Length: 504
Image 1 (cartoon, rainbow, N blue to C red):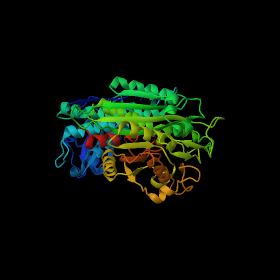
Image 2 (spheres, helix red, strand yellow):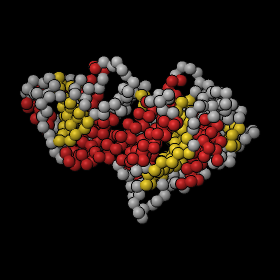
Image 3 (cartoon, rainbow, N blue to C red):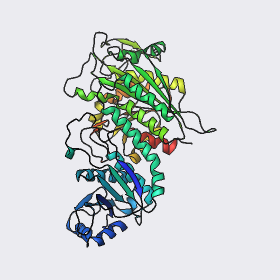
């Protein structure tokens, strides 16, 4: 991220300049700070409530510019909703929304007042930490390659102060959230970069930098993967000048005496996907730089877990390749042998992500014996047809893991919808000349075909596959904590899963 916004916590006071945001519940009740500002302004806030459509509904807001009697440039009334329904997800959205409004107003400094709300189950320090996280996430921008961007088009807000009666408690509560935001930003940055900058080798350099955070990193190169029999992954990479890698990240945070069995997260890292010999149409192909968003999410998650010193043992693995169509490239009809020993007829070289993940999943379960495996991949366009850009597809062989993932999605805001598996779908990928083929019955159930293919490589380990093709790159965002472009989807979801169930 370029020029990250600074966040500070302080006691409540009226700023001498900039923009201040204050809370209003859905019944029109002003918070304590809003009441004080209302008195200083001769009732301007009360008049604004009575004159417009804003009534304090959650997620809504209205702005009073240069209100009489106040030194600040503007006051934002932010809707908290019904007191009994105030929750972390809503507060994070509120923080993101307020930062957007402050940037739209051209504010360089801003403040948000967090007062206690009668009837709310969330105390001010927790409210402040969630609002601050939403604000931080909503402040993201990737302007690295803009050389002539006008000042009025740049994000202006450089410093945000979150004010409340217990600033020290809020700052402590925000500490883990700050590491989460760092992980999300790391994922967004990786996905935003063009493929001539971020390809397998350069991404391994970013991963190796995680050793500074206490993560152990191991890189498997082409020769090592060949010696392990990873013909499925290497088949995808053989048409590219860029060397493939399998990167392994190990975070050992579980205390002595706790369950030492790790949890495992696996990401598809196709740094550019032309489709190979089964080449994609040219329109929109530039977006295929984000076909490594699953791997970016795993990198961001591992950074987050290490940053907040999560009390868990976690393995992150990413298969990094580029899918290109040169004279050495894999052909439709080729048969490859995976690390598992199973053979695969490659019908479509554009169904390459599952070929990469097949070997990484097998290596993960065989080497580390994890409690479970979750893979993330921009695997199929079919999942976008099914679910659009509101939820990712969840496929799993384990009900408990599925239920926990769905709950984590609701809490984090990165939602999932469980999709089917089953023997009838499995039969659709049987091949006449090999153990399986890498596609199913044409356009029918395309995302399910990808999932049942992957299931053949988990060897009975509890597993979930997240098809994030519709969630990794947002052309227009419905969530104020997520910008247009790279979303970093998966980092918040999986951090919440670990926090809720797997830390000692």
